[in-house]
Length: 113
Length: 114
Image (cartoon, rainbow over all chains, first blue to last red; front, side, top):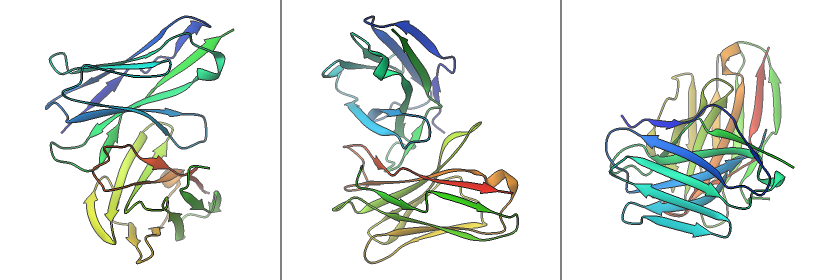
């Protein structure tokens, strides 16, 4: 079955720098991959979806890349702010034709002023 | 407010008991998903309903069951509760079940089994 690997160690960076988070997956390449943000005790919030035929997707200060050869997605936050501090989750379909998604364990990001 | 409503927000109950968690999806969404999140497990997919019918099952215990009603709201029933069932339970909804547009999550129900 599909497995998702995200760096379990927290990422601490200085305000204004670019934060880069990694999501690796095993087995088959998914048709799409999603990124969510989750704050403590709250439900995840959808940020971006990137499809397998897209190399890059942008939304304001967010950028996601998708490399099906490396089986990896990178999530970038440019000009990071303390308000960006949260856990970021990678998600993708459970199966090749699945309509339900599974989540990685997430990477906690802390932006220090 | 995400548009997905979950009740209750908090629930404290004893081992062996049964509880029901309720979810109202965002207006227009036909699919409802239930996830369990505990500290050491991350978000675990439990079950999906689409327009009243079960679409997919994940790591859902036999002691747990769910249903989606004609008005599209969903209930997750947890019975014979154990201490290990303590977790945050999230409901999410999406438009068509093929989640090309992402899921909308509710704020969750925090279940504590004592």
